[in-house]
Length: 367
Image (tube, rainbow, N blue to C red; front, side):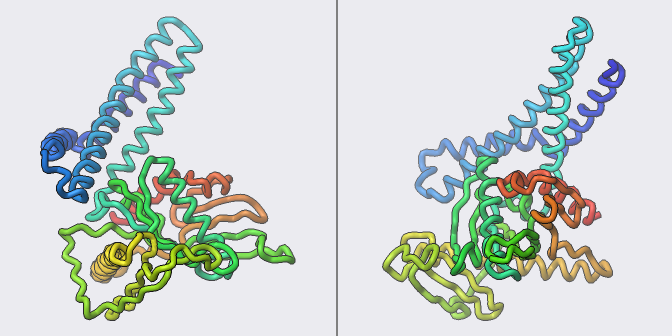
């Protein structure tokens, strides 16, 4: 790579970094960190464990954001020195190292640039993910379980904490539905582009004639409700059912009626929780999920009104990705055209490329 080309490329990277720093507003982030550090140092911090957890989690996230930006700025500045050394010493190994670092910096810059696109009202929140089997019988139930594992592996790879709230197991294999939380800042903004219908095409392992089967699973992503959301639920509008938690194949998880199912009568929304130890805890968690669903319903209604005012808007919540295992191997996003030829890696949680493409695509649709 010519010296002039490198110089121009480094200028371009530095300019992009300046834009990212401006959007992130590092000075404000540092000021917010100072306030949170003061709150975290208060002797009474853990008198309210939930609030303490929020403060320490937010502090940790903001510190990581600033460190990441500062480290990337340092790497961009060091690249110039590395290329100068390679040129002066005429050393192929140093040049190869410099070019490898340049590629790595470009990738890191792209990832950070995507983060700056998450500016929606709820994008900074944690996420609730609901997956349900749709058309396709036992294959759909198996597919739903594959998607659950995919997202949990993705979260694990990023160091995000997850909590399983409820799983309804199918009789033969797989799951009818599942709900879990991803407890990381910007989890909602990041995962919200995964919402929609996912399609799997494969030779069914459940068909003794080895026929090709197409099955579907739906993914719903909700922002976690906060105290400022004012989503009020009248107890008289709820039907509360209790039942025993169960595991795969109907095996009993416990012998008490601790699982809770809430039905919101005005909307017909039903949520369940069986993960906690007590009925009271399960009801509280189910209420949080119900509030999140009502918040999303309210947001969708507001979006529909805005789309109507704009003489129609983009509908991107339906079929959005195909996973093809036969007669060829490919996973393709139907909105962004982003595709990979390794479905196994995707099912193992390697979905960042799809998520980044989805976030960029969504930003284009909003213009």
